[in-house]
Amino acid sequence: MLAPTLAQQQIRDYNGLSLLAIAPAGCGKTEALALRIQGLLTRSEVVPPRKILVTTFSNRARDNIRERLQAHTHPAQLRDRVTIANFHGLAARIVRAHATVVGVDPSADLPESDWVGEQCRRLGLQYKAIGVIQNVLRDAKQEPLDDGEVEQLLIATGNVNALNIERQRRQENRLTYDDLPRLAELILQRDGVADLYRNHFAAVVVDEFQDLTPQQLRIINRIGYQKTTYAGDVAQGIYGFAGARPTEIDKAVRVECSSVFEFSDSHRSAPAVLGMVNSLTSLTGGQQLNSAAPGSWPSGGLSGLVASETAVEEADWAMKFSRYVLDRAPLQRIGIVARIASRRRFVDEAIAASGLAFHRWDDGVLDTDTAKRMKGMLAQLDTAELAKSSDPLGFLRVAANLEAVQDPGGREALAGALTWCNDLLAEGHSPAAIRSRIRIGDNDTLITVPGVHLLTGHVGKGQQFDWVIVIGAEEGSIPDFRATSMEDLTEEARILSVMISRARHGVIVMHAQSVPAASSGVAYSKQGSRFLSALQKSNPIDSQGVVEWVQTVDWDAVVVR
Image (cartoon, rainbow, N blue to C red; front, side, top):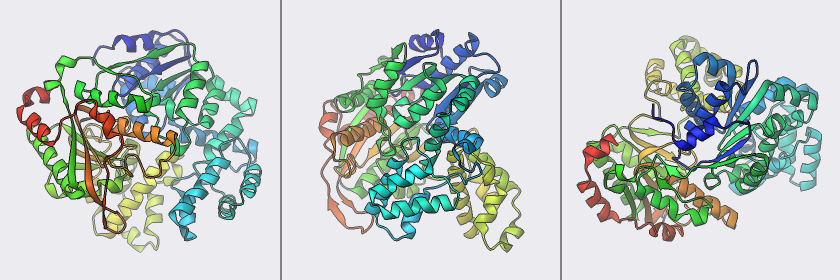
């Protein structure tokens, strides 16, 4: 185990329950939070039977922080003194336990998919209309309103489809992802209920505070106002589409917190990678980062901008670079990242045909809990009974005991995994063969296994790779064609920065002059992203320069760094 940095020690040893840690990518935030929790327990600032509540935004982030905590706390202490939950999971617990105080059935079906989108598609609605309906429903549920008040708001919008879908939801006694925080906040407005949670949790830790919605912050404040540790970085705020308001949240949290600690030394990335990240700070609102040990990176690391004539050539170049690296450093990890998965499709095809070991992060089976449940179900699956079932997917849902999973994120992951499993069974794969394909939960998890990793910018947030190739740096892709306001464009720059900052040794940003449309296959001319001019300030090398760099770098030094 590495010795804590000075900044991490300060976070660990800080007396008091309220603080804000500004920690950009690679500066040791997750480790700092684990040490912070260790310090709170060691100093008895949190004493039994009270606990520490740790909140994250995804199951992967939950697994990451749990893994770090295992290095700093005894298993029994972690089990008995720390509760780790993502926000929808926390909201679901509150709703399940106290729904009756706001007139809601606590046994209502929890969300496991984009139910609103499914209803829109059943109505035959087009993409734009679906987006409008989802936004109308989301906006109506951003305040602590009961079902009747939500309906009145929807009537006032005049959107008949949104109103009918909401009425259908109530009739079917189900909840959506927007209902969970709405009802949780409504429930916590009851002082008696809020007091239960304040007494149960003596301290709160929020990972990636910049991704909070105002509603989520109000929920946290009802449980742990002025006893919360917030950690994150506004420049990594990339969830505006989900209601996050990084700048607004940052201002509110700074008012709440008694102390602010700022990290600026990156322990993850080579100087060349940091140069690219720093070149975007005027667009992202981030801070300039320094390499904690610049001389330790072979040749100072790699940063490149590579242009290709077509998306197919781009994919071939990325595949050949990946092969070259893995031939010399077979235990390293290469992340090939795109703004959206469809822009990455040519790379996916090239990598799949190459024979290289690869892993698609878009697949349903990713987190440890889902993998364990799937493996257990497949080990005991009665294929004879399954063959008799008129509803094979329903049979699998019962076999996996889906209804026992209360965490919405866990339900969604398990539901997706079961659909994947059902498709493979229908294709003739055996349960044993499917079980053997599930790697998560073994020692070789996605966050450590070598090879090529195919993912999107949002999915990869919080992860790291030895090398990163950003695909599709064109107008319409990065930034996305839907980004029109300054706020939208700032978030798009942040998404690019997040993708780049996943890299340790080197990053290559690629763009193509011609890209076929995903729907029609018709090739369209593309202009390089407006963000490329900022990246040029970091003096990246071109395609030939990348080739020369990889041919001359000391690969023995790269392997051990």
